[in-house]
Length: 286
Image (cartoon, rainbow, N blue to C red; front, side, top):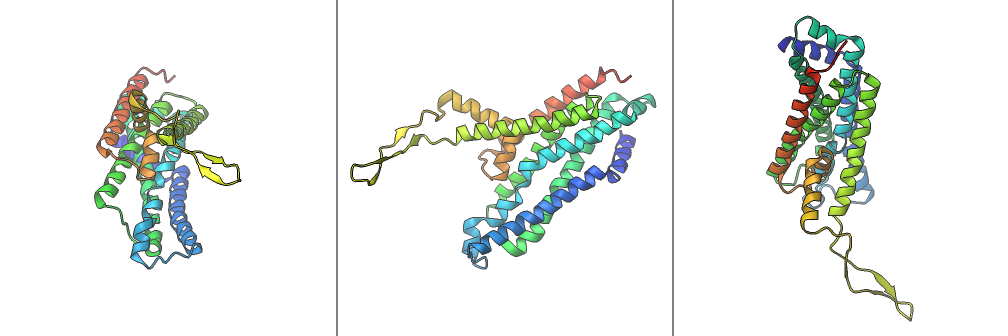
């Protein structure tokens, strides 16, 4: 497997898609910090005052935005990287020369994860380099920030396991690219919908017009869309289980149980890795 990884990383350094994805992440990190700085300046905020920076947590708001889109970049890169190996006949040649199917599968999984991790690191370093001088340093507790970083790494592993599962068991590059990209967008929309249901208020307050034309606040009424009991627990579990659901939580620093999120991501990664490797062992490569 060492030889496979060496060959994969050698190919990675020459891969235009990888360098393009890394460049996009670096650019987005810098633009996110610079855009937030310009927005705060336009509002007249005094960024030299520590209490202003601490109240708004400016750097944190931009630093973790990578979590919202890193899955899309991983879907694009992994499906193209592995799909090109199929179209070039590289996967079949590796097996012909004596490499095991499991070694080929997990070498591609590790390569895809490493490339995605480098893209994520590129965003963070770029955002930090531009944002720290302009927006100030982090104001949230250090354990929270560390949990968010570690959790997003495990979340990325789950994304990569899913995309490798699809790409390694689909011989056509175009099909795997479409399935991975379409799948991640569908899961992202599903996560947004679930989050909307979970964030629905328990009570809603309407407004009514009085006889003299004044607007009066009505009595709060129960929200029929508010989730309770087992139904709420199921929605929350699904939101925590979906890598896209976790990505939204990390991007907004809105998680409360990081150990649970990391455990669920590890479970998703393990299940899809085991299932993908088992299917690939039986796949006809002729």
